[in-house]
Image 1 (cartoon, rainbow, N blue to C red):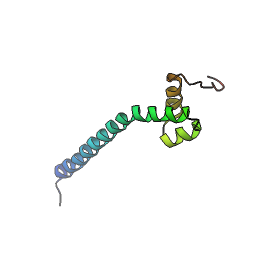
Image 2: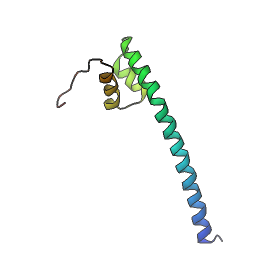
Image 3: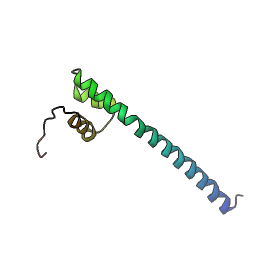
Image 4: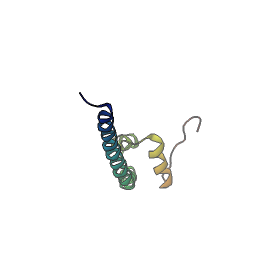
Length: 81
């Protein structure tokens, strides 16, 4: 039979391991954003469909259209904007 303190220590080690792995993945994802932004803008400038570019990039509409606005690409404003 396992001692409660040992079970807690094991559970906490697993939480720490997963937390560290999550942090590493989030850092990698953040590092990819500038390249993804540049590639998305380049794709739109070639005439690729915006919805398709956003879907393939797997980014939110807000982030994607923010990139386009920052790049000086016309973005139509929807109702309520």
